[in-house]
Length: 80
Image 1 (cartoon, rainbow, N blue to C red):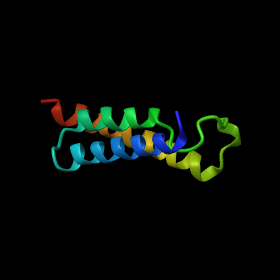
Image 2: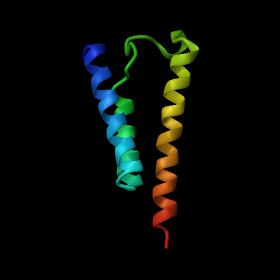
Image 3: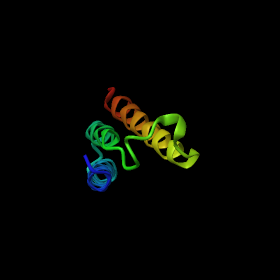
Image 4: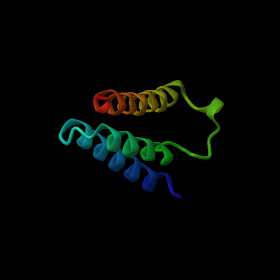
C-alpha cells in the first residue's frame, strides 16, 4: 500500500476510536478501532524498526499504550 493511503486509514481509525471512547463510551470498540489503526503504519512501512527516528517510535508506542488503556477501561468498567 502507498504510505499516503495508509495515513488516511490510520487517521480515520484513530478518529473513530477516539469518538467511540469519548462520546459513545464504548471502550472495547474504541480499543478495537485503535488497534486496527496500528496495522496501517502512517510512516514508511518499508523502514525497519531500528532505522526509524525516535519520535516515530514514540508515537507508535504511545498509540499501543492507548490501545492497552482502552482495553483496561473496557474490561474494568464492564466488570460488575
